[in-house]
Image (cartoon, rainbow, N blue to C red; front, side, top):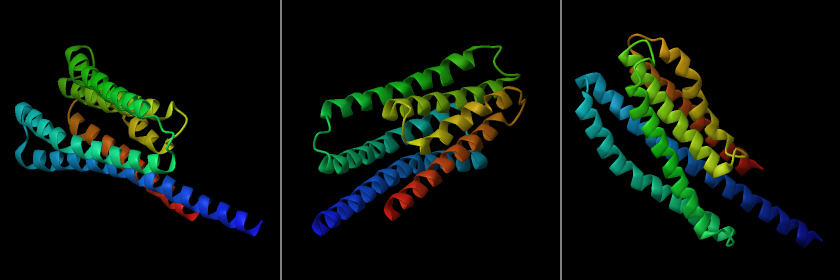
Length: 206
């Protein structure tokens, strides 16, 4: 009986460390995109980045950051498959495709549909801000639903709820909307990272 109790304790600790590793990987992913966004605002504050330059920056940033995101995802998948060999490879590919689809939908709505609707927002700046918040909110919400079906990864909730709840405020801002909405997204991502790290420490201490 003593051996069984010891084995259960070891398994419980291993499971806790596995959960903690998953939370840390989640925090790393959000920290990566938070850094990309922060660098953009640093550059924009010095040179006032225009439309084409902004598109160029985000194009290059995506080309650099996406492989890192995929690498984080792959390492997490490999870590979990070590302990859970029954994980379906086809299911993980399906999840990855659906996550990509959620970001595609968010991009179309936030950067194409909303900016083209003249009655959205009280100004062109407000319209872009609403589009940006919609892009982040819809994309991350879709990712969360795909990954968890709404039943887990509560740490992600601030990253999409804060942008979505801020849309009515951005709607009526005449100037400075893009900068303000950027800080809203930064705040949401920062809270998500802190929550992930807190969950990781809780899992280690269990």
